[in-house]
Image (cartoon, rainbow, N blue to C red):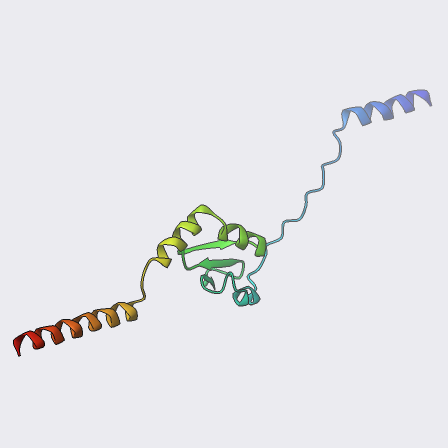
Amino acid sequence: MSSDDSNDTDRELQQPHMAKRRKKSYQHKFCASWLKLPEFKSWLTETKKGSTFYHCEVCQEDHTGDISAVRKHFNSKQHIQGMKSIMNVLPINQVMQNSRIVNLDNLTKEAAIRV
């Protein structure tokens, strides 16, 4: 019996430990409710790439992840620089309105000078 016991302990020492259990990876899916949040409303959209992706309109890229990944992207250097550049651009309808006002003022001044 002692030889059986020693054989058992030898086998235990020789056999590697059982493989550690791996955590199941979970693919987070895009939630439409994220679009209603004020901090994401202006730049976050759903993508056609798949249900696990979201699209950033500022960076023009698709990313995967849950709400914490969206927040992390929101605070990333690339996204912040993109937001700054977008904030400095006037919408096309405002540009056209401003140019019309300037043209109208110039035409009025020219007409007054000619009279």
